[in-house]
Length: 509
Image (cartoon, rainbow, N blue to C red):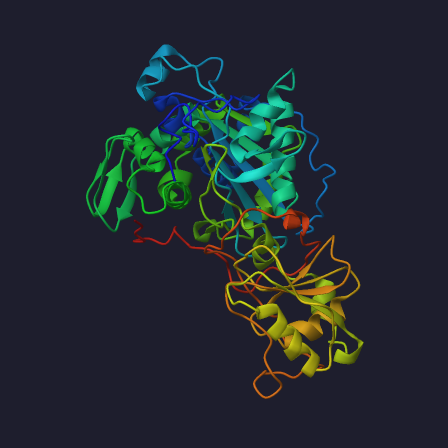
């Protein structure tokens, strides 16, 4: 994957510069690599605000509020019902009152900033408590941006902000794009500048991190030994922006940001911070002028939600991807759209209607099989096995490679889907808005139909809901199946998804 964060313009396969599209800014070295970290502050801001109740009013007065009308109608269904999803966005925009001295501390005084959103994380907060999850969306994800064709996810904001759209138009288009990709409904957003991140870290004080291996990268100015290190604000910037020298490049930088957020959350929630009113006040006032939120966000209203969640044990994960192809000369991240519904469902929970359903008799179930796995003839073999189990099976077919085996079904076909899922151990049942019938989609995870002699419950027997999680890599490009999104779910996953980087002593690469 070429490092387009450090090269401008992006390399083009033909050897000629790619035409610059409307809203697709190409930025200089310092501006771009630093811009990725701004959103990291958003999480810590939300977490700190959750407990510093006496500072809520001060914070509301200091931040900039943008009218986006959330929640709003989306082309995707609401995958998680009453749960809350807060979009945390970081970019390199400059607060209007940033002083030359402040910019000099960042080494960006000669840099005008930009609005490409380089950090995009959805904080998913389950209704009624449970395990909160940070879901990262890689900046280079190649997606459909409504009204602007296919391009990198980080350009959606600048596309929406162009031609008079402003910050509200930019955020509205970014939110719509993320909702269409994930099926989640965004309830609120927090947008933070690079300066806000720097001020936050200065207010909280040094933070401890732990690395499995020593790192040295001149591009990000990282120079850290293996083991534990204590970082000041400047070193923290370098830590979360490193991309070169990491095994998976930008994807591993997502891990850096998740890890750092988790460590900062643990620090912000410690008695040393929260019982020190001067420190909390300095923290909130220090970042307020570098923060934007939607005008429907009431920070005090988050208190009750946060009280039911262990914020020091937030899980971190990244949407499923399928490689890093070069498209039109741009280095990109291919999203595994077919695996997305199962991935989101593993976080938000199984729809209540599916949980309550009893498996239908196989002879009453019409099902078709699509092969998105790596085994040639897999759909034909699975179709034969389903026929032997008594199902009415359609013609097998191939589809785009995906990492996760799923049973897609339309609303009202929960019993039929459960009958199929019962004979495919490991498959994840997913409610689809576009499916016209029950479809078994085989993935590279290797799950397929078990015969009667080997399947652990027979079809027609009530069982627990099959689970599954997405991740890893498939192959191929993003298919039109991106609109196959899950609908309302009521029960959070019993097994938390992702990594708990906030555990004390956790080390990363």
